[in-house]
Amino acid sequence: MKTILITGASSGIGRATAEMFLGHGWRVGLIARRADRLVEIADAYPNAVALPADVTDAAAMRAAFEEFGHIDVLFNNAGMFGTAAPIDEIPLETWTEVMQVNINGMFIAAQLAFEQMRKQKSGGRIINNGSLSAYVPRPGSVCYTMSKHAVTGLTRTLSLDGRPFNIACGQIDIGNAESEMVANLKMSHPDLDTMDVKHAASSVLHMAQMPPEANVQFMTVMATKMPYIGRG
Image 1 (spheres, rainbow, N blue to C red):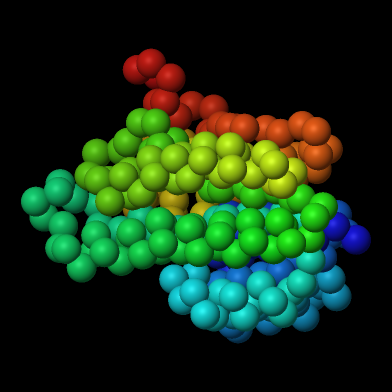
Image 2: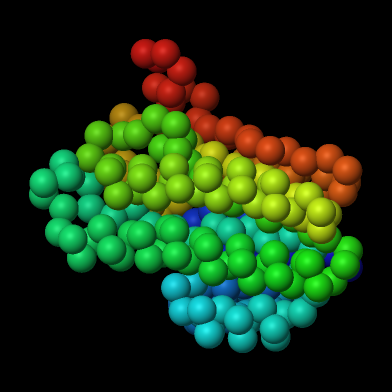
């Protein structure tokens, strides 16, 4: 049975992806802070493992990885948006919180997965959740946008460093999948074009199912009418 660890698995894209993989027979490790939501998923699927942990807590994350065991794929997904405002209106505490989750948390999960995959001798695959903000930002998104540019750097570096160990790394950049984060944006932007979160989840599944000799380096999946290309 193929195995995947998913961070931020309690809601949104993470939960939809977890349920997609569980439905395709994968053993899925569910990492998030909200233990009750993880247990809810694990109670519904015998191939799910609830692993409550904060992605910014390196010790708790190591314990979760060790409990889960063999990893074929990591979906490095956990993230947060932060305050939507110009830079001079953002408290330093907000900046620090977003960086802790979106950069430190991503680094910790990737480091642990890379270490485990290297020890396994069989390689593996790391899929980072980037964003369209890694290329073009929304107004008032400086914290989120800077963090997602950093994720792209992580993806490219892991792709190079993983080659000797058969560890592939790719990035999925998702635009306006219907999640809690997008629902909050839609409150202030009622005309926001969105897509079902299942389309994002099935795209992650496609990336994960690639054979070892192939990799989706970057994938963009977004609501068709998003103003991303040109002035759309």
